[in-house]
Image 1 (spheres, one colour):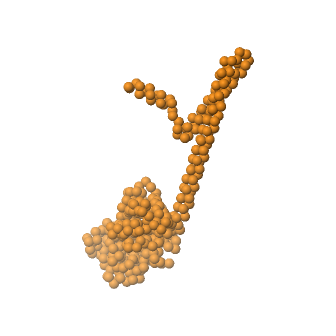
Image 2: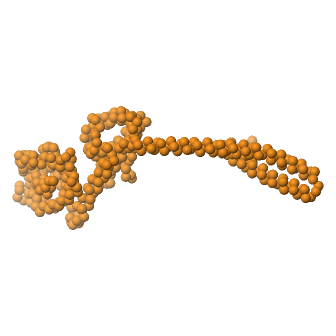
Image 3: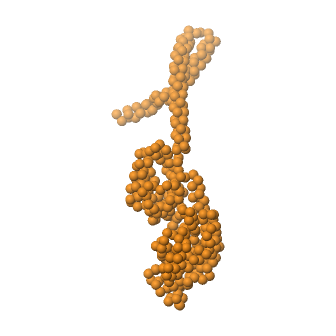
Length: 381
């Protein structure tokens, strides 16, 4: 593993002395640390410009100012064998014509080194000019280190279950592939051309009913808005080959206003789960059909049974009333009245069962409602 303390010192020395160092010195530094610093001289000078701009210096107006640093303190936190977090403080002096001190800054810095494509690279550089309270806050580097470690664990957790993962910078449109194969034809920055390629890939790979929703889900211009108040976004779609994929978007970084500026997009095969889901839905549908048929059979049975019972009951009630006219014995009259009352009660129960059967079959007519409507119609005619 690299000596990251030494590398950080050399990095700061090169950055701060970039205005006076010769091209040969810088090139030698690049040659010895090419795998870490970047891909070449142009990227290195771009990093220098960002470095100086982080101190709010106008690069064009600082020609006569030479920077030196003293009291460099560096701490190193090895997150794992793929990530190292280096932080510390340094006193930076700006010398006019290399003699007169016109700027004195107490700065803190954090640098994250990580393995990319088998090589160590600078993944993140941050510089700040903190106030006294921040300088005395010993939790600052520890907290940031935990955040870096948590972010790595999130990526590792995603990697375990997802076949494709990329990091999308919503401000610049940069897309960094973390795992899987990139979409053929797409480059590292999402442009209108890339959008057209994405549309072509969606039309080729995604089943027609899901194409519109897929394009809307992957639209990086609306991701930040759609993530407001949410922790993640999910989307499932069917491919033209019959398989299913589940896509997830989670915030990775926020700006000072709390707006999402970068996200992780992850895809994984969802075919087996979708198959089980569809099988469960079909099973529920079949059970629903069975229940509806059973309920219909019950209603038909009750309706027919009630009709079959009501026919002889009407005869019993009718003959009971005829018998009442012929009886003179008080005891027999009492028996007849008991028969008639019981018959009327049983007939009422049968009628209620018939009404319930009509309700379940949707054939009942509410007589009270009809009477209410008829009364109101007569009032206005």
